[in-house]
Image (cartoon, rainbow, N blue to C red; front, side):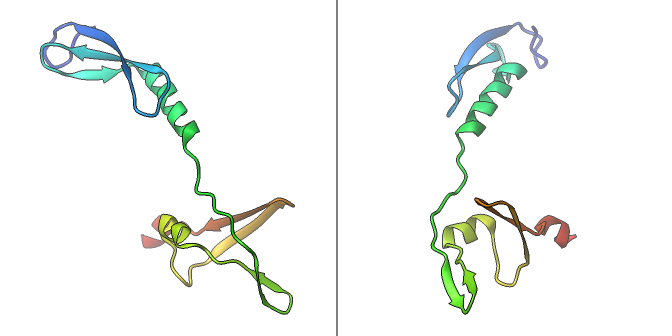
Length: 112
């Protein structure tokens, strides 16, 4: 392979990417310093990194509001990570007996 900038030959190098276990193939130009990554090995590394990402998970207590009503507070970490504001509307779904899904309005669509 040739460098698109200076037309010199690339050197194939295996490099380590932060948070990925597998090595990624990189093509590097010794003449001008240009480099690019081989697509398949880079895709594999990206999948590994995404698999290691863990969503925010916090244990909370359900509180009694009044009579037959229950509620729950959102911690400041959830509020900050989702950029929540008081008065915003949410959709709540119960797909099964062990899960409650809270869906936020699309803020980007609202701005336009």
